[in-house]
Image 1: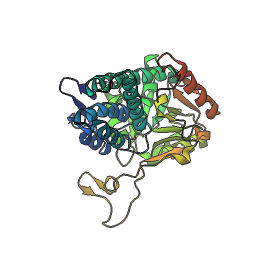
Image 2: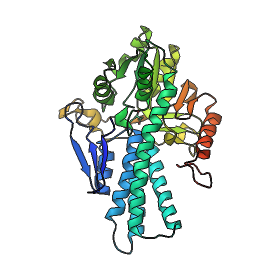
Image 3: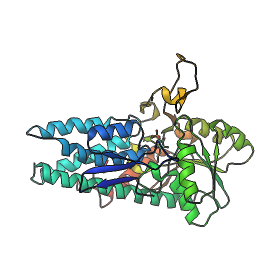
Length: 362
Ligand code: MRU
């Protein structure tokens, strides 16, 4: 599935499959300006680190299109900042906006200060980023597939699938890669309270692809592992610090601790765009707190007593020492992650796509 983020270049509109309504309804939300993009990101019409990065890239083009007059460049700066800050934890938002700024700088350096060539360049760059993300997922999926054995049951948390990326997925990309190698893989999808990305989205995607999936309550994890029902854990990430500490959906840290206890390998799968070498360790990763209502209600039904406060931290950070391997499009990174991450980013910056100065596209 690669059409859940679809840009209509003729009408300058971004069509997003509304992930809030899955699996019941397949409806699109159409974004035409920065307000629409920021709202889609914050209300989680689209979610998942790489998917929001690609959405942000298209959003930069829409932002440019809504600027006007002699002050358009200042207006654009402000709109890009709004997009970059729409959600705090996933670094892919900032990464995408920085890449568009770099594109802007290249257009200026090529001698053009006008909006029209910049809009064309932004649209081309966003399309490139979308295509690159699918390729990165397929490549890391092939690397990660070698970590799984025929007959394994893999537990995953949240949705790190096609929906969470431009297509194919990270954690689910690894599972898809193993299935494509002919391995018989079964999946346990944690339901992932409170937004239920596992129950609604992971189950929906895998079921559509005929990959056997069973949904389990988040709090069943210890029991399932103690019964020998899980051979491996693969999750995605929203931001990986320079030392390998990895932020992912709330509950991931607990799964990693349990995996350690039961001696089950715990892998994090993510493209290099999710690595933030400017954050030295997990303590520097900002954790998004989302509206209380996601915890207090299911649909229109209140679950908790009125006036009782709730915590709704959307992410937690799994320390690097609990991670067996970080699966990227440059291979499966092994501890010590500081060096492995540095080497992977360096290798990427030496690749032909990098600019003349060898600066990594991030
Ligand atoms: O709040 P969400 O749904 O955007 O959180 C998503 C996750 O935590 C995913 O596991 C992560 O972004 C990896 S997506 C390939």
